[in-house]
Image 1 (tube, helix red, strand yellow):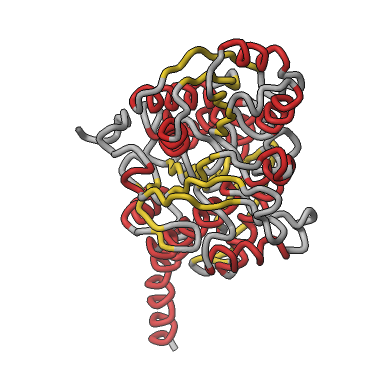
Image 2: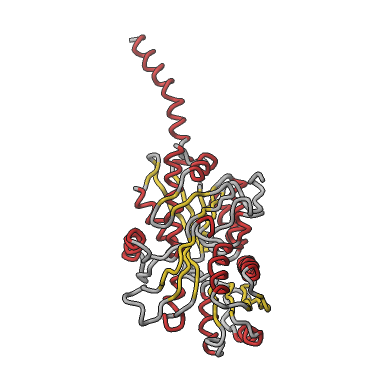
Length: 406
């Protein structure tokens, strides 16, 4: 009896370290993903509830568990305010056990949350914001900029429009970090391609009246009016440009345009516009299959096709969960190492995440179809050019990320 008891105790003691190691694989017994986005404001159609839906879809497709532990999704509305975004993220990290914050549509909210996440050693996966500072001088070791950046948008649309004869430009720019960055990046591309920037005007976010800005653009005499804004601001700019007679005398260049914007505008207003996108649902069989599943989800009340932000989020979260599985832990350092070491190859794109945290993949220059060219619902784009990763995004060496050794 004594020998049996001693053997059982020894076995119990031997099992304690391995039990501890198993528990340590996943912090707090679950992997928690926080979707921090614009749920009700002017970016809610391109991100918002659809972003939450895309993340939940990725989790469900992954099986709802990783390393034998549940994957939980929480969400909140940052209202496009950096202070609100950082306060929510801090509460999630300190009290909610959130391991990764994703989306962060709006560059200001992204730049507010990134350093906080780095301090707490939590991961940020950015699909919505555009500023190149994210993988430049503001880069962190725990961030991935996944879907697009302003450099990719500027080089795709700016270069093509100049090549097509649009030599002189005037910008209508959203007056915050994203808009200013997009204007600056596009200006460099325009001038490098032989064009000239005649001026710019800045507007607050969520502006309803663009009359004064459009009149200044009209007075400039520029061939091209570059819209360095997004969401409802872009939609309102395009609608009012027609009312004020800016178009067709001057060409509008959409520097950040989403398929949700085209759907809101209608093809008659948006036809012939050039834009650059990271994803188009009707590109190939794989993108169509995934997008139709997304559209058919019961919670997709508008039955909308996914934007590039939403498609990018699905891909980013899937890659993150695969990295946790491969690393054997949800600890940020080994997970980030796996994410950067493992190429992405899915319906969204193919490429790698660089040491600066930028996911380099193909981008697509498209032109909006006319009503006569569109054959079925959401048939909106003609793909004119596939821009390979090395041309679509800046090189690691060209970035100002302090983490990268020059």
